[in-house]
Amino acid sequence: MPALPASNNTTSGRVVSSHPRWLRLTHWLNALAVLVMVSSGWRIYNASPLYDFSFPTAITLGGWLGGALQWHFAAMWLLAFNGVAYLLINVTSGRLARRFFPVSPKGVMQDLWAALTGRLGHADLSHYNQVQRLAYLFVMVDIALLVVSGLVLWKSVQFATLRELLGGYERARHVHFIAMALLMGFVGVHLVMVALVPKTLWAMIAGRKERV
Image: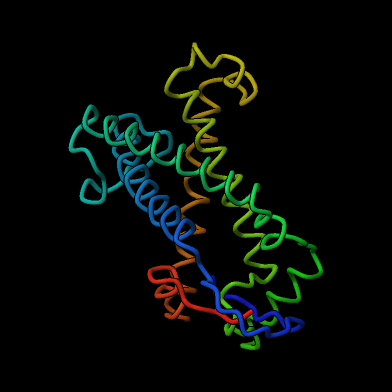
């Protein structure tokens, strides 16, 4: 999502990348893993629909249930390990505290209103406004929930404690599906924001330089 410029930053003349290499790498690996997991997950869903609809075969991956499961598990490990690396780097470097906090209902509403009225700036891509912070924190939790509920669906007996915490196997299926739908909602909004501010895409590809 586009960023709000930091109004109280002073310029020291030092040039740094708004998106360091490790961030760009983990971002694109996450994007690949999510794409594979969702498209293969839709094929798995079609084999035993949870709700009264199925996904078009053309947008699913795997060709058949066994193939879809293989794609899904392969992407699962990529998402899990890459996600852990992303979180560890963010926490140990202090980036999590600097970039994603503070977040308050008032701040979120103010930045949301600024975005809706066209007053949200996009000069400093390294600074996240509070709508972004909330969205990114949400998607971190959502992906964690996807992984946890997926473990229950994959190894229900081995992860019996997790299964019970989610209310049983069938409820875990609902949790997994809803978490997937919410993730797709985030991706949809994210893509719209990128389309509105194209320079954010190039920054995530090449790493735009910022003065700090």
